[in-house]
Amino acid sequence: MLVYKYRGGNFKRDLKAIEKNFYWAPKFDELNDPCETLINIDPFKRQSKSIAQFFGKEKSKQFLEVERAFHNLFEVRKKAIGVYSLSKTYKDELLWAHYSDSHKGFCIEYELEELTNTYKSFEVFSFPVIYTKKPPEYRIQDINKTKNNQVIKKIAGYKSKRWGYEQEYRIVTGFYGEHPYYPNCLKSIYFGLNMAESEKILMMEKLKGRNIQFYQIIQKPNSYYFDAIKINDLTREYHTYLREIPSEITKEKSVRFRVLRKEYYRAIKAVIEIELASKVDRNSLEWVAHLLRNDLFRNVKRVFILYFLENDSDREFAWATSNFENSDLKVNINDFAK
Image (cartoon, rainbow, N blue to C red; front, side, top):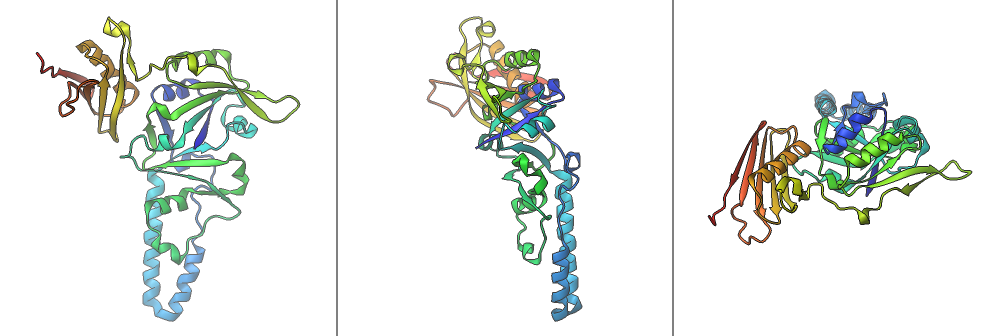
């Protein structure tokens, strides 16, 4: 499923986020709807009083304790989680006006499944927003709905019908702030009607070799509706980003590589396995290590990288390894043939 993020107002910040492969999931109190997380618990209170009439004060106290426990659960979750708001459309005129600096910004297209499944160690939920006339209600039958995804949907999955034009699809994360993703989930970028030509040129230059399709938003003749036209031809572009060590680094021919496996434990540790098309020198391994650290794991204290050779059938031991301890890099080549 394709989803879209409108950006505008701070081009340098937004371009850096794309270059470094992360999105920012803000806290609820940083969003623009003051009614976020609103839940009506009056039905629960009424049901508790009715039950108390049959079972006495002791049962009523138990329901009151349950109510307090769920209230605390909601409050704890609201303070910790982050929300990345997306849309199901890239050509809504109001979204371009409100979230893309009056059409002077751009819109990012992601593949949702790839975006949410980049690092399985993260707590990530995704769902479409439900637009209603009234806030969601909390009832006694909700007591059994204590699974994280059900609690998160109750907190973050509802908005007033007045917001319905946004066609919002949300990614809710276990913690707010910066969230890395693997770059293949970013598919396209759409330039706004009023985006500066200099910013378009800079963005296309900075993101060259990433297999990103660029589009220009246009207004249909004699119409309020928008469309998009392709700017670049991906069939003629060479996809090199996170796939190739360039010849200026190897001092010979370029060497292809691919990512076999990646694991990321929030700001603590990252492990990534690389397959090289051929052996390279230490300088090339250091270049790959710095690329991965800077563009994928820039906020991680410890990064472990294992390098395997494409034609090596024995994958029990890596041909080479490198690891970062904060900013210190160590590289080890295990060339057993020597």
